[in-house]
Length: 142
Length: 142
Image (cartoon, rainbow over all chains, first blue to last red; front, top):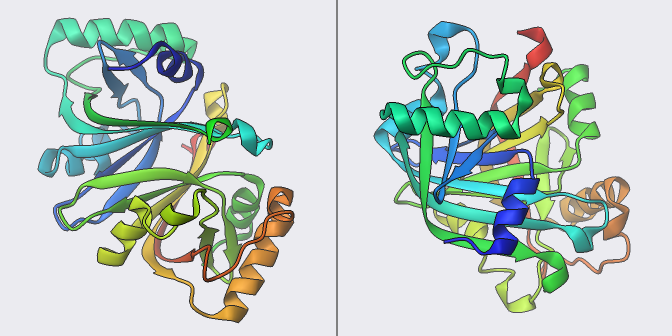
């Protein structure tokens, strides 16, 4: 689904932004750290305190409306270097142990911050976004 | 609406992310550069080519569904420095010349890149987001 150039861009950036919407069409957006595994984007809920982890707005929205958008972009004061990759896709909570473990490994490769954190499927929901549309834009190419 | 700490945070960051949704509740998200003027966030459409400026997905969504979310966040490899300000609000296209001029001045103060660009109300739509909910989060405060 992604070209080599897009993969390199995705790998290089550190933060993405996830937009969700509730059934009334009211949008929500949060920064996420992410991993790309087999063509899907994943993030894990590492928030404290414990009791809020399953009740976050992004998860409540996904439960009622799995359509999401994710943008990964590069900001630079030289605006000819601006760029973004936008995908629209469907979000699902990971329920497969093997997928959870594999994505966590990739998240820990990208983010050493996660290596010291205990993250488990029952306490730290992981969400995958399978893209069905992508749009890659580089200012310099316009 | 915003505290001094929030204003300082807003002023310091360079890029925000705007989430919109269409009438089917399908979300969209793009990076924006922004100015805060009298408690509202503003951005201007500077995209090329000309013909697309009034037909961008973010503008089409706002036309049918003015509810939007804007997040301004700080990423840092030291995750105790993560932070974000999230607002949900209503978006409207600016139609008042004075407001347009005043916001443009503030955008040009924040972004010297705009000083060389010709930006006019009839060719470069400006959108204001009046927040009705805000949430300010700093990792270090958790």
